[in-house]
Image (tube, rainbow, N blue to C red; front, side, top):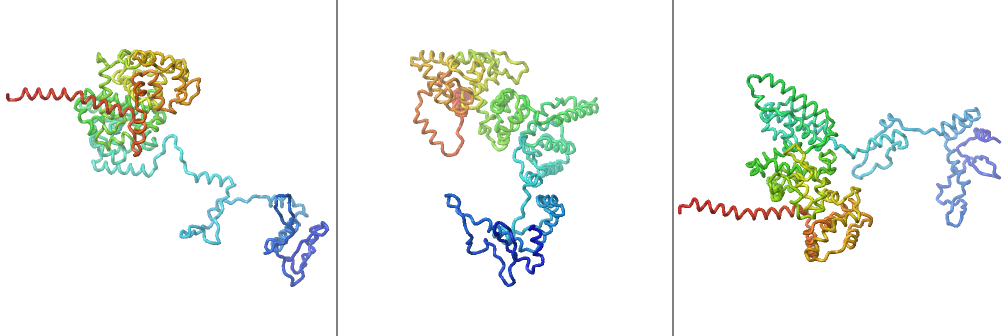
Length: 608
């Protein structure tokens, strides 16, 4: 008998909901319960699940009798009048030839529309219990739908900003409002002397003052109005997402500012003509500068000169330097060379935005506002460090032409000196002259790089400096032949002192064991992975004094000193230690001469 006929034969039953399915000799049949009998209870609702069980395999797992269990589930499903009527309707549709439509309707996935999602009632959560109220469930999001996936993507906040994290619009509007309020206090126009207070009010470091002023194409004698400053400030915040990009924009714009002389501005005969021409020139230059994409800006050494000159003119710790203008250019060259030594990791001579963001330069410039003693800022700006570097250069420069030749660096081996002057590390940079220095001469800027690399061989730039010198063929690998070439002269110098040197085979084995590198050659990454060991290797190859000092040191004292540095403070670098010791020696050497000079003056002015 057809299943449809079987079901229709039961439509006239008094209790169609009480249907029981059983299986007899493989044929399905439906029977009804008599009135007054209890309805069928599904197997899983019984307290005693006593259905026949079948043991499968040897794993010990048991399962209920599947056919009987399914019969009970179907019986429970058809106990609902609505389910039974829908079943009849589907069977009638199949018999009428609408089977495909019914199947598509059953397999159709129902997604929640945005309108339904918005109209979904919110569940009030009891915050005291920390959960969802009893009897309620959290509405589920259609994660499998494309719209659900896009919604999840929108919910994840952005966390990577390769071009700098942009400043929020609220902070921009707050800075602009503060700038407008500050301008009102100055009657709508701010002079160069008051510009520092305006920058401090809007959160810009005060030592950006001079580059910012020059970026607006203004001279110190002029003033800026709110109608001009506010649009420039708004454009600066809009184009530059972070401090590094704003700093690069201002320094680059200041370097392109036209040099306007005050005599032309004060000419009474052509005052109006010159004023209109100058204003037109200023706005033209300013518009061209802000059209340049900030991501393409690279800072040259000359771009830092206005900012450092402003530090000399305004910082409390450089008052004695302000009284000696002949040393201003030397201090500026020292600071700029140290900045490029640490920040310009590409050795290109121009600092990119990515290099500026990875450095600590902006943090150190901001720290200058807090430190009244500039010698506490040992990085870049310390006057004591400048004093040591310049005095050492002045001692080596016998003819005082601000150039050093090979004969002035006799502390190192001759072969490493030849490599230094061969063009591997010297750039011939000289900020005081537009002419490149000769290849066999070392400028003061090159000397800054040299002494920093020589006295602290553990830094990344110092390791690159000496690796370039040792890499004779430029293949990026130091072979045993290249190391032996430099050690041969060092071995001869050791023998001249009456000391028996190690043969190169033992030295090379020690180097390979210390650096844990392949025996075929040493790469730059091997030195950078072990900077302390790299310094010992370099001294072994070409610096005899430091090599002997390391060999004769007390290892227990060095270990005890390292163990005592557990207070969490930053340990001074080798360069900081060297500069502090040399500065004390230089001061001690000058003290007796000053004392004699003062005693002579007292004798000359005494009444007797």
